[in-house]
Amino acid sequence: MNKNIAVIRGDGIGPEIVNQALLVLNAVADMYGHTFTYDDVDMGGCAIDKWGDPLPQAMLDKCLASDSVLLGAVGGNKWNDVPGPMRPEKGLLRLRVGMGVYSNNRPAKIWKQLASASPLKQSIVDKGIDFIIVRELIGGIYFGEHKTDEIDGQKVATDILAYSEEEIERIGRIGFETARKRRKQLCSVEKSNVLDSSRLWKAVMHRLAAEYPDVELTDMLVDNCAMQIVKNPAQFDVIVTENMFGDILSDEASMITGSIGMIPSSSLGKTSCGLYEPIHGSAPDIAGMDVANPIGTILSAAMMLRYSFDMADEADCIENAISAVLDDGYRSADIMPSDPTEAAVCKKVGCTEMGKLIIEHLRKG
Image 1 (cartoon, one colour):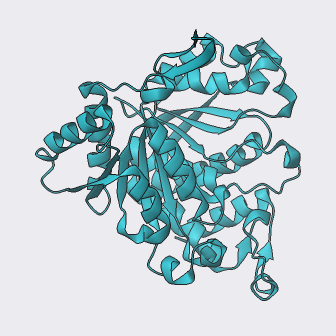
Image 2: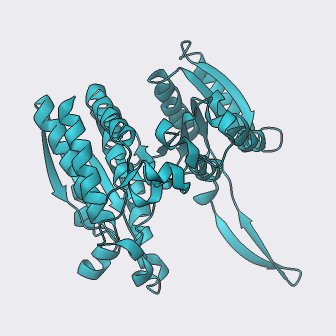
């Protein structure tokens, strides 16, 4: 199978971690008889420096012409003082809107080898943490009307939270389809005891449920969900929710897994062309030092194979190789145990060496 992948190395540690992900993809292509071609795209701070724009139209066009996009990270202190519309992150927002990727899918998974890194009690971690939050990405309060007026001598700020049936239905379908590829359990999270937008959300989700009889749908209020994620995360398979709730819950979920360096994400829309990236930032303080953890980016590439290219076996192969490397005790700096006894049986490796080890286990099968 031939696939064209737009590659955004970005800023900070972005080039280092993306390079390792591409080497892993090349190994997968050799093993399974695929051809992956890569088209480099400038976005973020590097694009500002080169083009005076965080995402020039020509670069967006490359992404739109690809089968999927792999992104490292963008931004850094170097560009803190540029005008707001020109900040590196504006390129990412423009990319999401341009690609029409309205669904951000972020896994929360605790690798058994890193269980001690979770801040949760061991008894909770032992039950397992392996769920995905499907977050609506380009609607809701973040994209509604924002204004500040002066009323009776004081400022009054207003932010509009609005969702249409169509917007809810399209993200709902992503939730149901994702659950179908996992354990077939979907939890719809809202605040229907207070918000009209949530009552509409709940009604649309239940209407959709009739089309997915093989998926069990449950409802949960967002405040309860926030509590349940730390009390009993094992109960969740797929969570689907609106933009702001998803932003908050996915950050909470990332913390219970022990390290953000291990977490990938995908953003999908109407087509199979998705945007795949680790959840961490560009970490400019360690850029060029070969100490960054590439696993989140490599797992993002695995998600691309699974969800955009329907290459489930290839994705499994990557995930199994990562697990085997962790079994062997290899750790990047961010996932080295703090306990001296645990650390004594682990081996700290850099970004390049971690990628090399994962490829070696890939080839072993």
